[in-house]
Amino acid sequence: MKIPMNYVAFDIETTGLNPKYDKIIEIGAVRVRDGEQMDTFSTFVNPGKSLPARIVELTGIRDADVAGAPYMDETLDEFLAFVGEDVLLGHNILFDYSFVKKAAVNQKKTFEKMGIDTLRIAKRFLNDLESRQLGFLCEHYQIQLDAHRALNDAVAAHKLYQLFVCEYGGQDCDTFQPRQLIYSVKKENPATPKQLELLQRLIVQYHLPRDGMVLYPVADVTEESIDLEKITKNEASRLIDRLLANCRRSYPS
Image 1: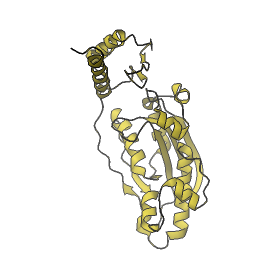
Image 2 (image 1 turned 180 degrees about the vertical axis):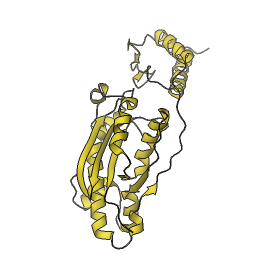
Image 3 (image 1 turned 30 degrees about the horizontal axis):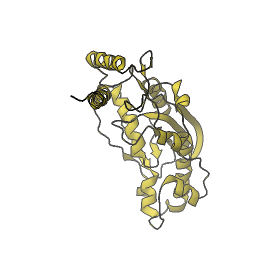
Image 4 (image 1 turned 135 degrees about the horizontal axis):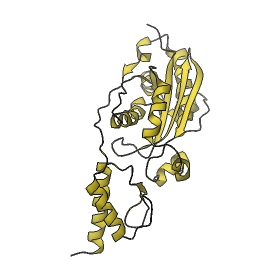
């Protein structure tokens, strides 16, 4: 059984940990042939909402970085073309895959892939280590890493995989074989005209500053800016609930 040496290592940064609610803000990928880096893909992604403070602190990515970036529906085809038919590789790869799979489903595209998970390999061979997080493993193996940036993490996962192949590939080839990545997700629908009409009324009611279709943050109302042209039906429902709840607190019956 041959250990794969051709793949696309990739990583994403997001607004949070839940692909059901959170958005991609950066994608990084490296195409590998015969174990060598051949080409890279890197882009910021506009999530259609402002970035949580904890994400800015963690990644160093700011609203200004993503404001002029393409939305996911504008950059997905380019990323899928870069990946092509390759096997995917990443550290805890199902996390990254789930966000891209959701974006693909929303655009009625197919994204069924085989993947190699360096976290799974680490758990197989490195149970004696106190952590198997990417940053810890890179420090352990002296791989240079500016963590929590997508392309950096993708390159680090590639280098880590190559070290694992050299160190453990002769012991257990099966652990290095690609496996089907499975994540079930339903297509999100855009906000309905009725929802958008109600949101516009609430914006006027709260005197929220706005630029075109963008809702900006106001204390005690919403902690984030949201692009109403990109908002989904579920996101609109949650935002309406928050604004109405604030209204009830401000004007109790």
